[in-house]
Length: 79
Image (cartoon, helix red, strand yellow):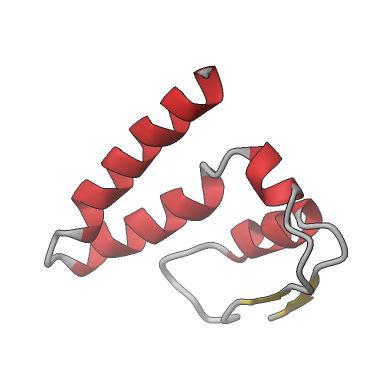
């Protein structure tokens, strides 16, 4: 129940940013979606996963992609 409340709160926060027309707000929403995902959700992914990230991305740090790839079982990463 606690995880659901935290997840719902995070979704509301990100949704508000996604509705923005400001590019920085939208980029922050994407960053929050990756960083704040509940670890139990990410760690339960069982589909083959490829995390792709641009090496020159100036909005979302490449460390976020690396962290995501580490948390998804068997994921591969391409930068």
